[in-house]
Length: 147
Image (cartoon, helix red, strand yellow):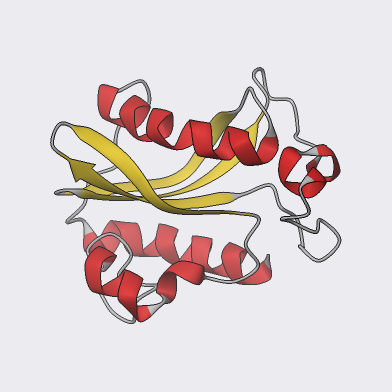
């Protein structure tokens, strides 16, 4: 979790300098389209319903990246110990330093956004992997070794 928190600070600091992506405004159709494309996958893991608090969201061309906090409607905290992904033994909440975060990457396909990579409760910066960087460097340059 510390690596994610540190990267979050780096990403936030880098936003002012990079400036070649956009952050979809709260309430915008683009932001809703991105979150709606991801929601079914996160609900499969955490149980429905899920809404997101956006910590960071970037869009450039046909790529998007976000750091999110999932919650129940109205702000209810999700108890990670009682989620479908734990019941299916896909996630051990004891090993995670706090699973209440999601990172996601999207690609625009035609007129719709598709969430192609995401992680719930990751304890590392999984999206800094070179095959992912090769495609998504435009929205995650700090994670991929350069601006």
